[in-house]
Each structure stands twice: as structure tokens, then as C-alpha cells.
Length: 311
Image (cartoon, rainbow, N blue to C red; front, side, top):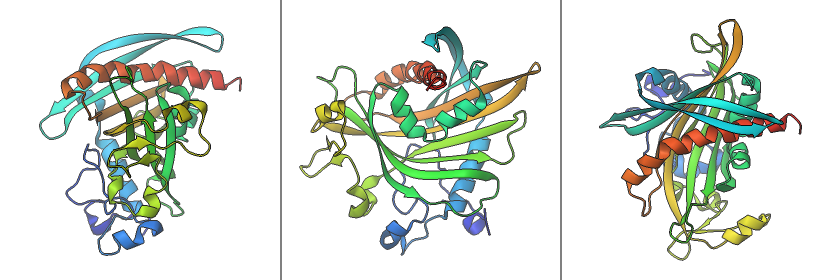
């Protein structure tokens, strides 16, 4: 049955998806290219996995987070000067670790414009507006042909995102391998007129078959990780070819909502994340930088969205 959850206990019984623990080949949805690895296990169906994603997304409420302040960001786009106010939040517990979050309201871009950049082709668009990301590579993609209760426009793919780091002489580039899941709930959350959601989960690519790992832009043949520029590499990608990499971990949830506030239609962007860049960066130093880093994403994305109008 479409939308049925395997065993009635969720996609991965006893395992919350929104965690910083990487998913292995038997924890991602069934895929014909993974048949040999998954055949002796009970991997989730696409429907049960997406159903659990929707459930966990609906359970996350930023009103339960501690508000830590706000930031005002100003940027130029479309020949005008824009200012956006961004709420900063965090949540800490012994099980989940520290989640950092932000929330912003937008009158200068529509929900439809934001959805077209932040849900559709999320990873590819993020590379377009984020200077530090120099490569995004799809490693595996699912064809979703079934109807799944509660959602539409479902996309699932494993993507690798390569980030350059500040002080490149001291810090190695980072690569994050994630399962990106995006969809539109057919019943928007209370108080919203429409909504779109995307989630990113860390992936343990080492557990996947060689045929999938071959699509990676990471070379591990010499006992260390280095960047392997693709045949179609840009000038900057060619420059990074052979650079040492550190594999980080990243989990996130983003919600874009269309709302009516004081008789006026507006858009809301909410985002929460937990991450570990690994390597030589102490977690304490990372936590100091994450709130400002996720805030900076907002003006970068808005500038890209507004400038696309003239494209």
C-alpha cells in the first residue's frame, strides 16, 4: 500500500533518522543497484523512509529551541539594497548533541521562488550561491514512481559536497556525503498555506558497492582521501585536484512555508543542523562558528533568488 510504513514501526525501527550517525547501505531505501548488499537484510522501502522523514520533520518545532539572539544581514540584489532579520536558536541534550537553528521571514521573495531554489535541485543550487562549495556530485539517485501518502514531488539522492576551507595552507578541504530527501507535504502544517521540506542525512559511502563508489570524486586508493576532479572540471576544480580531504558529517532539516501575516502573504525559512567537520578543528571551535555560518547562507541564497529573476 502506498505510504505504508514497514512493520508499522517506521523505516528503521528504534532509529531516529535526524541524527549525526551516518546511514549505511542497509539503512537507505531499497535500490536496484544495491540489491546484492541489501538482499540479506530488510532495508526500508522508499515509501516507509519518506513517511518517517515527514513524521520527524513535523515533530521538530523551533519553538522548543533556546533563542540566542538575532542577526541583521544586508545585501545588494536586483539593483536594490535588502535587509533581512534572522533569529538564531540552539537546542542541546545528551542524546542529540547540539542543534543550531535559524528562522527568517521574507516579503521580497515569494514562497514559489524559494521553493524553486531551496527544494528543487537543492544541492546544485547551493553550490551556485555558496562560494566555499566547489563541487557537488550525485552518487546515487532513486526513481520515485509510487504515490506516497501525505507527500508529492519526492526526490531522493546521495550527493557529495566539497567545501574549500579558510586558511587552506592549514586546513584540508572537507567532503560531506549526504542522502538528500525533499518533498511537498500534501497537507501543509497548521498556520501555513503551503510548505516544502528537505532533509539531509550523513552517509557511510564505504558500505556501498564499488560500482557506486566509483562515481565519487574522492580518491582513497593511496590510504588517504584526496579530491579527484571530474573530466568536466572547472578551472577551480582542476586547481583542487589531488588536495587532501577530510570527511565531515552533516544532518539538517529545512522547511519553507507560505503564510499569511496581517493580511499579507509572506515566506518563512526555517533550518536546523547538527554537524562535525572532523579533522583538526576542535568541536568547541566549530560550535562557535556554526551560528554565524548558517546565518550567512540566508543573504547568499536570497541574492541568488532575486538575481535569477533577470536571468
